[in-house]
Image (cartoon, helix red, strand yellow):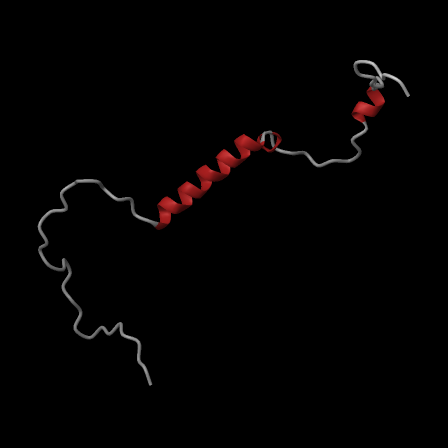
Length: 82
């Protein structure tokens, strides 16, 4: 076949470029996977903060002064085993 040259590519006309068919509208963030993952991570961090209280490094907790509302004597939180 011999040498093909630098790069032999067929030129694409406008009709071929625009022939996408029927496609759904996508968000702008979905076009950039790095941004999409970053947004997803931010969302997960937000959910995690709602579930877990953040550790406060080195802040004094104060002196324990007992239960604020008192202990309920009639309350039982144990699991009954047969």
